[in-house]
Image (cartoon, rainbow, N blue to C red):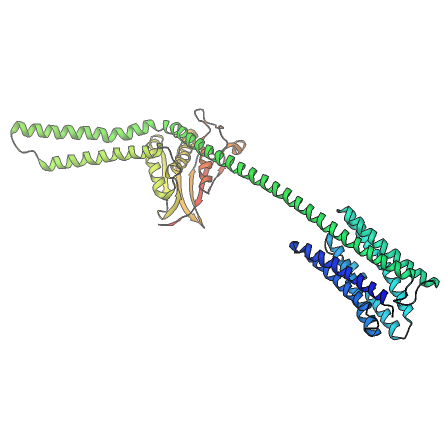
Length: 493
């Protein structure tokens, strides 16, 4: 037993242990499974060297079986860790590497237990690991193609050093000039130990360089990604602010256009409104003159006035005054500037109020209107804006019927529930819409009317869409047009 070479084995084991323990401890903050695998495999290799260096202290069977298995497992674990630096190793590589190690161990155990001499086992050991160490070279070359070239070159050199020293030992044994004993002091054994010291040291340094450089690049990539995300967030915030400003401007434009469109639409109804207001005002004047005459008559005759007559006349005055006030109230509601205040509304109330305003105009041109309104339909929206939509639809239908020249002018207004929505249809038997004009019906500033602004239907569709609904139409030339207002149904009253 040569204690000097056994001490060298243990020194080699100590080097393995210190290097891999230092890597494990130094990189512990990264919590990397690859670092753990590399370090644990190196420590396992250190323990295998302790077993191989205990020949004489342990039985030959224990040294061969346990030492070789631990050495193969430790070496394979480091190779897997190295391959894992650029993602999981391929299944093909794993199967090939496992198969190679299993075949080597099976052959070694077979030779040992068949009584082959120690030199044969050493020759097989050196031959296998001289070839197996080239895996470090190929792994380093693979890593060098993508990143961490310095660390990858160190790994490549480590693989070449290990392969060269073990290969030299194999050739020396085949040529009969190499030592046949594990602890025999000879130049080839010394070369192997020097190669182990140098190769393992360079290999661990290369692994550290690769891991640290990859982590550095990952941090830079994360910082760049964070900067890009912050830039995107800033752009998104700016776009959100710009969009919010545009939406506010759009609402203001719609309000202004609503007022302009109301003024244009109501111009055609001025005569009707004057007539509607003139009736109750004239009646009030006549009734007031009658009261005045009755009071003067009673004063002249020094008698009591007829209270029954006065009571009836005053009641008529109150009724006509209320009628005039109701017309004025509806006009004020229709002309007020909407602030987009949404409340719960009844559809039939909205339609009836607008119908009251256009009733005189329809009567003057001879339009017969028919309504089929469901009084239970409710919705959530802005009353002024929705009345503007209804007024636009009614005015358009009245204008179409007026220009049609038909002997019988009919306007049909109906409402119904359809699933989760309500529908209001305004149908006329006018001339319909020409096919070449259908695409421009909802276009802004496009109109077929000589006095029109081209705002009404565009504005109506915009209002309906802001209420979550749709405004559509169907028209057949010569047979009339149906506009359908579809809005979310709140419920039934």
